[in-house]
Image (cartoon, rainbow, N blue to C red; front, side, top):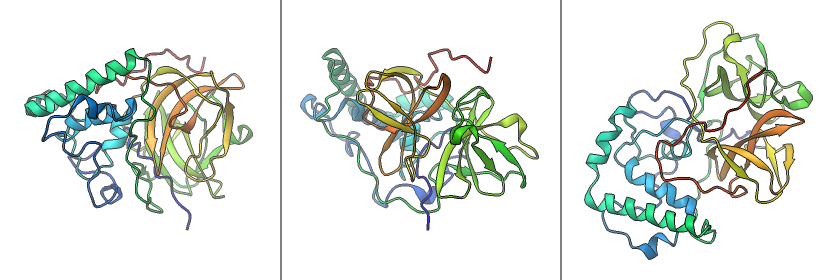
Length: 316
C-alpha cells in the first residue's frame, strides 16, 4: 500500500468549529508538547538556552496554543499545532485577544523569558544549533494525508499544474505536469486565485504538490480559505535539492547551491520537517520543499507575523 503524504499544512482549510478536519490523524495517543509543563512552573534562562532558536518559537506559541490561539492558516505554527490532539483553535482570530487574558502569570513570564532568550540568540547571531530540536513524529498513517482535505471535483477533467501560482510559473515533468480529476485530489487552500493541492502524478507512485487555476475548475468548486505565507528572504546554508514530492520519491526539481537566496513560505511536517520555499528555475517562479535545517532562518516572536513581505510579479 502506497503511503500518502503526511504534511500538516492544514493550511487555509476551514475548521468546522473546534473539530479537526482529520481528527484521527493527530499524532500519537500521548499528547506531544515542546515543554509539557510551561503552564505550571517558571522556566529558567539556562533551561531555555537548552533549546534551539527555532524550537523556542514553537515553545513560545505553545503557551498560547493551550488556550486555543488561532494561528494564521498556512503558518508554521498553524501547521504544527493543528496536528496536536490537545489543540482546539478558536473559531475566529478576533477572540485571540481574550487568549492573552486567560494566560496565568506563570505562562506570561515564561513567554517573556523565551522571547528574551531568542533575542539574545539573535543578537549573538546564533541559532543554537546544538540545542534541543522538535519532537519526532510517530509513524505516519497510510492513505490519509494529514491536514489535506479531499475535494470532489467533476470527473473527466485534466488541469495543468504549476509549481507556483500563475501560468508563467515553472511546470514540472518537462512542462507537462497535469492532474486528472478521475483520481483523488487533496486541496490545501488558495493563493492568488490558485488552488494548492496534493495529487498522484499519473498514478505512478509519485505524489506532487502544485497549483491549478481555481477559476477554471468546472462544476462545483470547493470552498477554501486563503493561505498565509511568511515571505522572508533567507539563504541556503548548504547545497541541497528542492522537490515537489517530499512524501515518497523526493525527486528533485532543481539543486540549490549554498548561498542562494530564496523566499521562505512556511514549514510542513511528516516524519520530519520540510521548508516550503520559492525560488526560480530557468528564470521562472517555482516553489518546492527542502529539508528543514538547510536555511538561515532567524524569525521573530510574533504569532501573527505571517504576511507576504516581498512583492512578487504575477503572470505579467
